[in-house]
Figure (tube, rainbow, N blue to C red):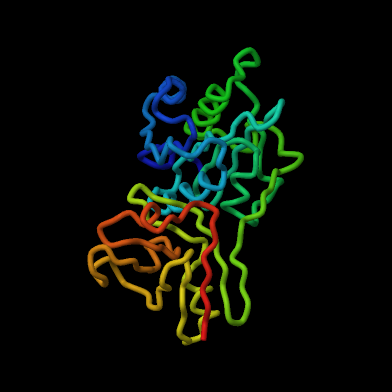
Length: 263
């Protein structure tokens, strides 16, 4: 399948560039110089510096809203070693471009390394990260064969995804994200929760607070100012306060642990 079979060519951007400096404008200009009819969509440029786990979380939850043929560029922790590699590959009709630093292994656990390609720069004298990304986007956007963009990667950098710790009567999970509203997202999916729960009652403990003992469907299930827990639209457990900031009010931060006991 070639990208030019699609009417709209979308490039999504996920980066830790922020919006304060010129880096983002430089990246976008480089992409449009390579192919000026791209439609660029920003997923986020406020990824915490070098945080590939957060980048993978953002992109993994966003790509379901993109049409097939979209190109997704991840510019997070790009200079992760002296001679960094930048790669591209196709997955389920989507194209991914970014550093070989483990970010894509946090999204997909079954990639074929033989079909992951190192991006060979179009101009050996211009090997900036943005130039490499722009070259790869234009190459794919013009429908050129991905397997000819460069050699297959020798070693695909892989990172372990943090998983909940599960016993027959308990789950210990980790806070992986605090959103703009300071809702707290935990790395626990509903199917695992229900499997371990097995129709039992539960108590969800988060620091020295009274436990949450039932799941809500939405914020209106509790009074304003009360804490609640529910599984969000992405399927992750979320701890929130109706009309308030759960992270600040409950003193919950990224990478901290919550505990669920079943009885």
